[in-house]
Structure formats: C-alpha cells, structure tokens
Image 1 (cartoon, rainbow, N blue to C red):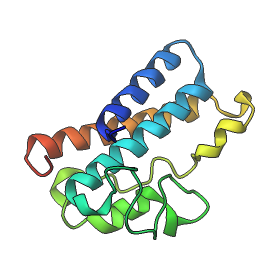
Image 2: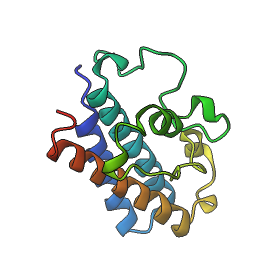
Image 3: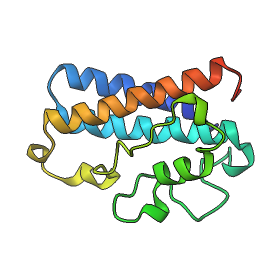
Image 4: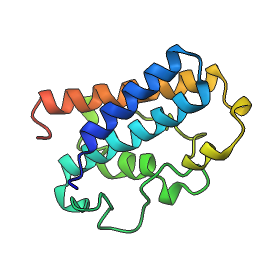
Amino acid sequence: MKIDFKNAAERHYRDGELLYTHSYWANADQFYGLSSECILKRIIAGLDPSSVDQATGDFTNRKHRKHFDNHDSSKDLWSYFSITFAGRLAQHSLPSVNGFSDWDIFQRYVHESYIDQHRADSHRLATIILHELFDNLFANGVIQ
C-alpha cells in the first residue's frame, strides 16, 4: 500500500470530529493525536522528502520517533519538527508550543474517564492549527 499522510490526517480528523460531536472524548482525542502526527509527517515529507521513507512512513533518520513522546523530547515528533524547520517556516505561523505535550499514543489503553472534554478540546485546537499550517504551506508553494 502507498503511504498517504494527508489522506490519513484528514480521515483521522473527520473521525475525531464525529466522535467529538457525540461526546466520546477519549476516542476523539486519540484521533486528533493521530491526525496531527500524520499532518506533521506530511509537512516534514514536503519540506525534506528524503527524510521519510515513502514505502513505510518511517523516518530515514532514526533520531526521532513516529509519535509524540511526552517522556523524551529528543524523540518527540513535534520537537523534531520545531527544531528542524523553525528557521524555514518562521513566516508561516509555526506553533511554538507543543500542543500534544500531554498526549501519547499509549493513552489508548487508559480508562476513558481520564480523558475529558477539556483535554480533547486542547488537542482538537492543536490539530486544527497544524492542518491550517499545512494548508498555508501548500497554498504558498512551500510544499508540494
């Protein structure tokens, strides 16, 4: 199968929105995190195509992970993105604060009562900001 970060980001966002409208905060929150990871990987692949293996979706440089990592910033996708591309994207509203510093893919295993609307709201907003960043970069020809 062919990797398509943009489509995956859009699909996860739509699913998150559907769950959000029905107050399923925990699962909506997971989809927002997945959507944001996918859109960041799409932006990174657009800025530096050789950094992402298009067959697997893995980074060719193993210094960072596929996911947000709120335990180790040296492996965190948002941190890698901010550090690596901040200079190139200064005029494009690069989010300075990691909107997913309290999110982890492994939260899918926690009881749903730990993830409330407030948490989902903050991740939803961060996801919207990243999608807007992608749209802005694409519209301005920064990425293809």
